[in-house]
Image 1 (tube, rainbow, N blue to C red):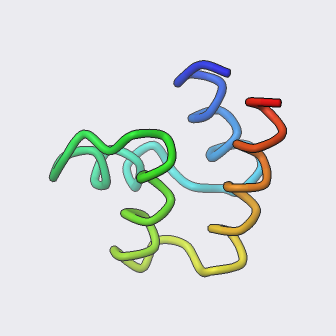
Image 2: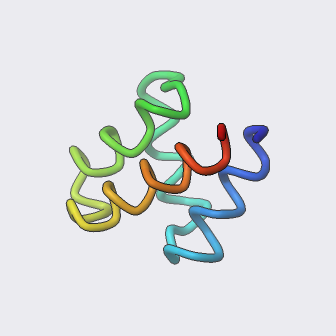
Image 3: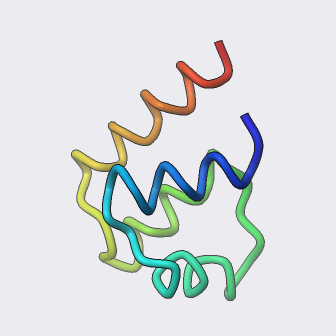
Length: 62
Protein backbone atom coordinates (compact mmCIF):
# COMPACT_ATOMS: atom_id res chain seq x y z
CA UNK A 1 0.00 0.00 0.00
CA UNK A 2 1.23 3.48 -0.80
CA UNK A 3 -0.06 6.90 0.21
CA UNK A 4 -1.85 7.42 -3.12
CA UNK A 5 -3.78 4.15 -2.74
CA UNK A 6 -4.77 5.17 0.76
CA UNK A 7 -5.99 8.61 -0.34
CA UNK A 8 -7.93 7.05 -3.24
CA UNK A 9 -9.60 4.66 -0.79
CA UNK A 10 -10.58 7.54 1.51
CA UNK A 11 -12.04 9.52 -1.38
CA UNK A 12 -13.70 6.80 -3.43
CA UNK A 13 -14.93 4.38 -0.79
CA UNK A 14 -15.65 6.72 2.12
CA UNK A 15 -16.45 9.96 0.31
CA UNK A 16 -13.85 12.03 2.13
CA UNK A 17 -13.06 15.06 0.03
CA UNK A 18 -9.62 16.20 -1.03
CA UNK A 19 -10.25 19.40 0.94
CA UNK A 20 -10.97 17.46 4.13
CA UNK A 21 -7.84 15.38 3.70
CA UNK A 22 -5.79 18.52 3.04
CA UNK A 23 -7.20 20.10 6.21
CA UNK A 24 -6.15 17.09 8.27
CA UNK A 25 -2.69 17.15 6.70
CA UNK A 26 -2.22 20.90 7.13
CA UNK A 27 -1.87 20.87 10.90
CA UNK A 28 0.58 18.01 10.98
CA UNK A 29 1.85 15.38 8.62
CA UNK A 30 0.08 12.39 10.14
CA UNK A 31 1.12 8.89 9.25
CA UNK A 32 -1.35 6.60 7.53
CA UNK A 33 -2.42 5.22 10.89
CA UNK A 34 -2.76 8.68 12.44
CA UNK A 35 -4.78 10.28 9.63
CA UNK A 36 -8.09 8.55 10.50
CA UNK A 37 -7.81 9.87 14.06
CA UNK A 38 -7.06 13.40 12.83
CA UNK A 39 -10.06 13.26 10.48
CA UNK A 40 -12.23 12.05 13.35
CA UNK A 41 -10.91 14.76 15.69
CA UNK A 42 -11.96 17.40 13.14
CA UNK A 43 -15.40 15.81 12.95
CA UNK A 44 -14.91 14.91 9.30
CA UNK A 45 -15.63 11.20 9.79
CA UNK A 46 -17.45 9.14 12.39
CA UNK A 47 -16.14 6.21 14.41
CA UNK A 48 -17.64 3.71 11.97
CA UNK A 49 -15.50 5.14 9.17
CA UNK A 50 -12.45 5.12 11.46
CA UNK A 51 -13.00 1.39 11.91
CA UNK A 52 -13.44 0.86 8.18
CA UNK A 53 -10.21 2.70 7.48
CA UNK A 54 -8.23 0.63 9.98
CA UNK A 55 -9.73 -2.55 8.51
CA UNK A 56 -8.60 -1.43 5.05
CA UNK A 57 -5.11 -0.55 6.30
CA UNK A 58 -4.80 -4.00 7.89
CA UNK A 59 -5.88 -5.76 4.67
CA UNK A 60 -3.63 -3.61 2.49
CA UNK A 61 -0.62 -4.29 4.71
CA UNK A 62 -1.41 -7.99 4.80
